[in-house]
Length: 176
Image (tube, rainbow, N blue to C red):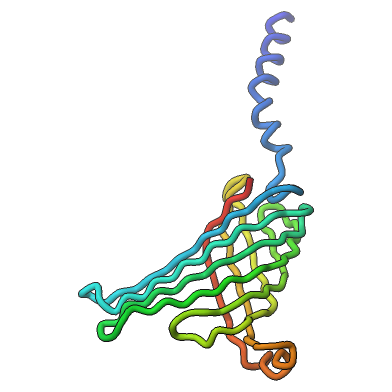
């Protein structure tokens, strides 16, 4: 009888770490911060005609679902002829996340400014949607799609909405 009790206690002690993990939730908690990053680049076989881009964001969760943040994107090009060029955008965003366990679809909006050597400096805004898939409790892959339109002032919004651009991103993120 004593051996059975000892075996039962030992089995329960061994199961405790997995039971603790089973109670942890995937995703975000109120007060969490989030950091995302993604990048890409291309060059020809002589490492000329280089184009590289990077985007990062930082966000704060006010609830398990509602996030406000800031996103910074930068594009660098170094053509074979001519001088190098820089373009960038800085955008604030608000997203609402849906809790599907490890999968977190989200919908939101963004607003910011587009600037650089090859673009007309202007305001940008638009809707966005995406998915975050948690590969670990605090790390995820994400897919983001945005529709951005440009405008100089509020009178331009209705006129320019249909002449926007689609922006796509695939990257990595962490939250803490």
